[in-house]
Structures are given as C-alpha cells and as structure tokens.
Length: 148
Image 1 (cartoon, one colour):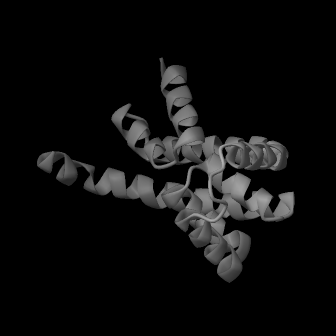
Image 2: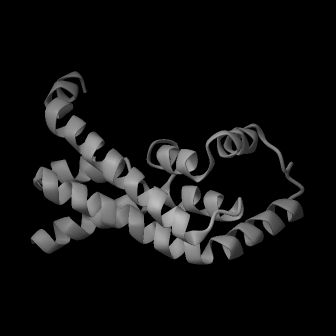
C-alpha cells in the first residue's frame, strides 16, 4: 500500500510540483518521505525533458507557426525577461511555483542553457521548494482546512 502512496506523490510531482506536498500529506506520508518523493518527481521530469527539450520546443514552435499564433505573447515576454535578468537560476527558482517542471525545463533548454546547469539549478530549486512547501503544508494545513 505504501508503494502506491509513494508512486502517487512521485507522479503528481512530475507533472505539477505544487501538488506533491499536498498529495503526500493527504496520504499520510511523513515530512521526509514527502520531500524526497517531490524532489524525485521533479528531477525525473527535468532529466527526461532536458534530453528531449530541444526537440519538444522545436515541435511546439512549428505547431504555433502552423496555427499562426503570435510568437511573442505576454507570457513569453515575461519568461524572456526573467531569463535575461536571472538566467537559469531564475527560471529554476520560479519553476516549482509558476511553471510545471516540464515547462521550466523546456524553457531552460530552449533558451540555450547547458544540460549540466539545468540539472544543478533545478535540483537546488526542487530541494528548497519541496522542503519549504511541505513544511508549510504540515504546519498550516489544518488552519487552511478550517476555512475550506
């Protein structure tokens, strides 16, 4: 039964990081288990999509051009501003909060970051945000649940 719980947190964290701590706590996992599984889920996405990130970004660009969608949307401009100002570390820092691990990794790969830097920065970001968000859910989850 624990394997199913672990797998749930791991898979959720691969797709949407913020749901990892919430899923872990709701399934009754410990703080440490939740942090480790959330980091593992995000880093799996980072590894997979940093390898295929260029190909995915090229496919996405072709698809957008075929649909005749504008290249520079408000969202794209913000991403480029963060990249210009903070580089890989800025994108990595914001990935768990604003992006999905998949999208953040593809953005970093698309904008030309070396794979090694993507791994390093996404790892510290995953550890920091997983520990912080899981702690917040553990400490304040009951307070929030009262208002829901």
